[in-house]
Length: 260
Image (cartoon, rainbow, N blue to C red; front, side, top):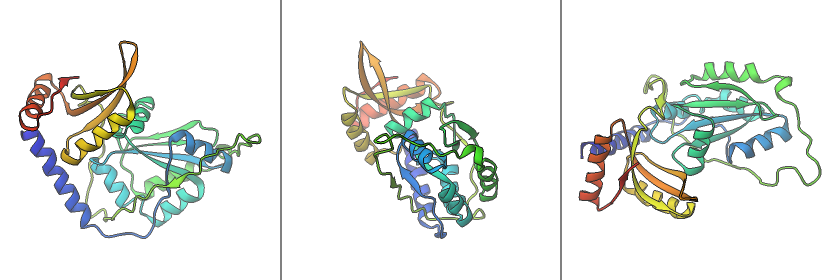
């Protein structure tokens, strides 16, 4: 019970704090797209790709949204020279990308050249000036070769902008931790549902998210020769903690699960 109360309380504090922040003028055009789609668009425009891995519960990520990505100079430089995407590691596709790129801390930012080659990996919270220095360092001709696609082979999907609209804070009003780990506590979780298709797993995920502030992820696995989608709750170092959480879910919320 203490675990549930803790996450609900932290969620309330974060929501209250964000609501009190004031807006900066300036916004990075984060596209609603996969990393691969962003790379393809960047290749045709001779730009680099900027990827920001984040989560709704990540304090340092929120700080960068409110300060660094809301900075006029940073947003203009990214919009002019990069195709930018945000990847939420708690979403299904985001979790897959997190595993593929071995993301272990948040925030983590990746920069790819126009050929889709990784040129930098940043695993720290960056101020506007520090990020600008990195962005400028990679913004040169060798990293910005325009890729000419054959007829009918250019990107067909029109990328839409991700409406972030952060309410911003100054660095004086909120000081973030350096990073959050995405792995060191991911030893034991509670499997609360196994589904044969991703849409059913996502529907259940969305229902749980409306009630719980606890970590919830969807993991694609192969069981008995078939692909399944497991919905997992919690994030524990020891199996005994996970067992206590499993018992709370069963006794107080009638959610049956098993240790994963």
